[in-house]
Amino acid sequence: MERMNACLKMCGTVLLAVGMAACGSFPLTPVSEQGRGLRQPAAAYRVVQPGDTLYSIAWESGRDHQDVARWNRIPPPYVIRPGQRLQLFPPSGAEPTSRPVPPPAPRSGIRKKPLPAKPAPVVAARRLSWMWPAQGELLERFSANGPNKGIDIAGKTGQPILAAEAGQVVYQGGGLRGYGQLIIIKHDDDFLSAYAHCDKIYVKEGNVIKRGQKIADMGSSGTDRARLHFEVRYRGAPVDPLDYLPKK
Image 1 (cartoon, rainbow, N blue to C red):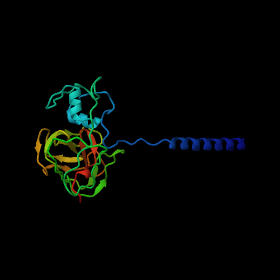
Image 2: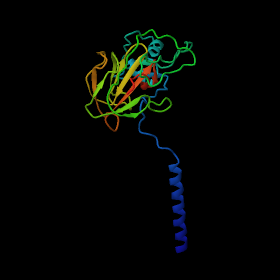
Image 3: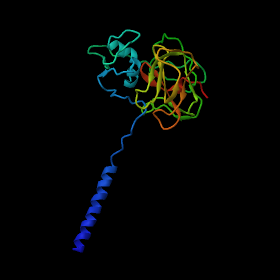
Image 4: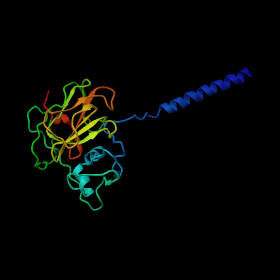
């Protein structure tokens, strides 16, 4: 009997070890990823929720706001209403949207410049002159094929966040998962910038903002420490902010 009990105990130990090894072979799913939307970006349609703007929906879906407006026949100033159903893919028969390489910033001190395989179309909008939105250590860099679609700047709670360029606030809220309290500024028809993890916010949607204007205090909303997550998008596509910010 004692021998049988010992055998059973040994078998149980082996089975437990195998089970634990099998469980450990599956990667853990992160709680959240920076830049992943509150709702599925791959969905063909999006139902507008309270607090949404056309710009925030286009942002979390990785679309150009002008494309989303065109596909849904929404004229400027792009007013949408809760319950409205927006199409996030081109309708059948629509021409594909061209995605030219963004023009390099026309200043000295730029870290690197995009080199297109063929000449990019001339952008008619005024040239932008970017400035750093906050002072602090660079925590994380842009990763084109990774989860971080911007840069992260370390700081302290209450530290000023400044508009990197002049423009208009087109979204302010906390509806995009992973961003905390977020501000999106439209600079022209091509470029938008975003400022995430804000604490106190000093601007509202519709406000016209000057370059260098204080728009918020740095905070830790949606993250584990006080930081600014800063993104730049060109026609809906994330680009490396360090291509446009002055070299430190």
